[in-house]
Image (cartoon, helix red, strand yellow):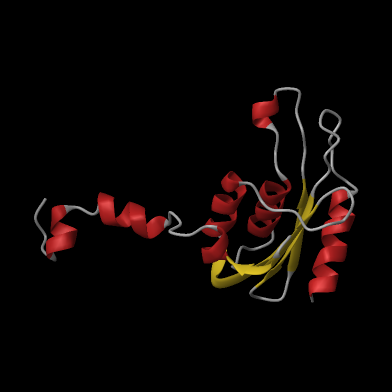
Length: 140
């Protein structure tokens, strides 16, 4: 599986649009239903709106039916594993299976190891719950 993911990430990397940095990135993941999804970086002259490969991968995940990511690989222009940036770790976290594994340059790591104490929907629910919801009543 890891070899297939790395090959799919390398294939995606070759499609990257990186005319400014020339730093091509491809990403691939296995979904909990057995599908494979991938993405590549797409740069923009307005650097702040550049799309990372992980964003393309998550878009493909959602477009093809959603699910949870269970295994993930990201490669650079030489086909070597590279680390997702902090923003992309959060993007991946939103769609991660609790036991998701990522192939990092230093080896396999869980999503919790690459993004400890990650921010999740549970954090939002905890803060936005109404007093009625937290007390178990119907008050408004």
